[in-house]
Length: 312
Image 1 (cartoon, one colour):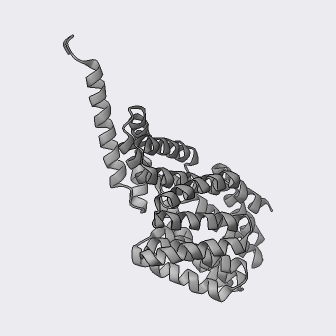
Image 2 (image 1 turned 180 degrees about the vertical axis):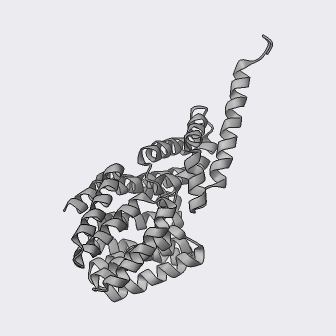
Image 3 (image 1 turned 135 degrees about the vertical axis):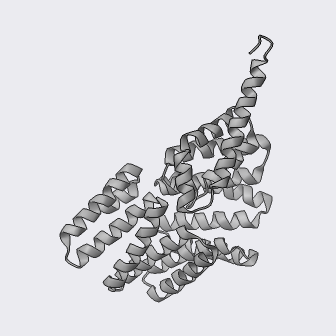
């Protein structure tokens, strides 16, 4: 190249093409299925580097688009595959990008996603603080969809803290709004957690009804993550009611799907549940093997609650 080349412009153009290429790649593979998760896995270093490049160059819209493609709670690539350190870094960038753009709705969304991450990793005090921030912004905006999602997540937090009455109240408030809005995915999320709550309070008939309703909606939406997690919970329900053969079949069905998706957090939970089944049917060697597999995964993920549950 000649000495007249504008190297600053050349570098900016190169970076812009890099960001554009990998943003398109991330958005093309954001669908929650095994093939797209594997495609993101293959290019993960480049995709994350491109998001970081967009952030350094203050391309705020692109940063937010990367976050939407990669960081969704439950079925987003980084959360489903438990890349929690990378997920936190990306979401913190996304919050700052939304604030820089003056986009309060996106700010609230990304703060709430950070709160879900804090819940997943057992930092409940941080989760409550972040959820409250997101909820306050949602109320200020009058955004009913976002209010419903935040109420749902606050319900999860109350459940995790053992306050079942508060959890049920928050879930019901969320469900009323999502039904009013016709938000099928939101309805499914809350039915899932109401089903778990019914199980934990011994109302097994209600739990079965809620889980089946959630399973039907997940099948309707083609939500493989939702189907796998509901099968897992139906397996626990069958175990709780002494139907061990059905419980094992349901947990195995769930495990096949989540192994294909690479959902390591749910794999650990399902291995633990299969271990409980093996123990209760007298196969102690198999139970020990399954518990050990579950513990190794929980330790790898740094999931303190899961480790305590397996060791307990």
